[in-house]
Length: 291
Length: 290
Image (tube, rainbow over all chains, first blue to last red; front, side):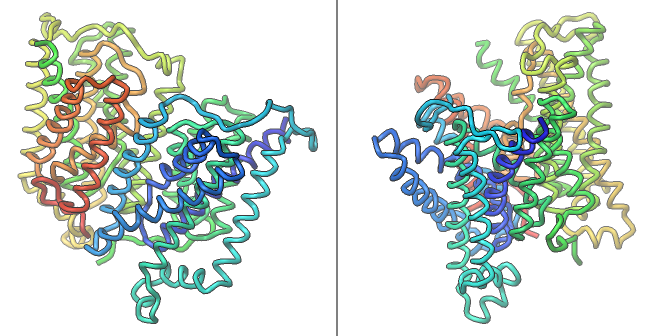
């Protein structure tokens, strides 16, 4: 029982970590909560479904959908956020705009595809391989491995590459980054496409394992937000830790508490962190009201 | 005719919601997306009390107000420590927790099944049992809510709130107890919003958790922001427009599922456009720019 719950928590946690990572990277370079990230996530799953409907095999549909989602993320940045930044909009304005975008994209998806559950699973549902007394299907193993690899890749990318360093520079101090000749607009655009790519991969993985509904993005975003705040915004190990914490709290909590309360536990964690450790496990101290 | 009355009653209910949220978000600068939680507390208090204890309209309202005031203290608490977008996230968390209580505490709230058969409101032995009477009742309370918030924000008290909105540290330096003001504002705003819930429950006579979701909270904050936070006329116009315009979609002959999506797309895009071209809203004074 315990090992099964642990594995379930690990699977859910991997997906939350991917969402949290993209969301956190975007926050750290732009300093606002990109709520529309949840809708971008759902778009990733539905683009795959659309390509699959057109008769493409999943091996072609998935890369196409990932590219499409990355483009969507970039378009949101160019079309809405960049003009707002040019007007020196505050983080609240950007946040409200992203709430609006979230609602628009999510409803477009449900307008086009309908509210009922869609699936891109192929073949029969198999029982899964027994590992340490838990059952895990090949696709679930893929979820854990791919997420782990992506987190590691991003970590190396941020430390070693020029773009990664530029992202950290912009996150640290946008003014100073501009002084040393870093095109912050380019860097932010890149961050949006990267974050959206990660979200799309997470969404596609989860819809290969279970199903998709237009509301899936909202749910993933909620969990991602909690993960990112618990882990510490902008920190890659933090996103991974936060994702795992949320996944584990949800699934191990079921051990002692009735299932329907598993999301409530997650939000209690959120409130706890916001009140007592808003910078998360591994993050920097957040701003206070200043003179 | 009943249809038009129905729209007018809804507008009154939303006016109560927007003026109370405007007090919190527009005048004091605490952007909250937990307003549907207060609305829901009022509605659930009304439904449960009047079904189990046959209590009357005013008693239900009083009880809802007390419940919402307690919740107001709890939700205000993070605002003492965190600000701006982090505070928005905290209210987001509270909204989800309250919703999950409505949805999951099956023994009390019947969960997703909702609570049917709530008796109609009765005031001093006089049953408010048709649309006309209810319109008058809701208009009275909408007017009272407006009057209360109007008096508050145009008094010295309201000037302190605006000072907190513009510069918290400065307000504190003038010897104002900022923390206490913030809690009071949430208690008052929440209490007013619970009255809207009370009216809604007595009017529809059926409630379920789907009326008090985060999307409802986002709708109410959209009305305030699009209309113009920090003025009273603006958010009221916002409420009227966002209730009426989507209804127009019905007359184009769209199926109701499509209309529901279009309605949300409509106010979502309006929100984005407002932020892009007029962040202070239609009439507002608070331009969210700190």
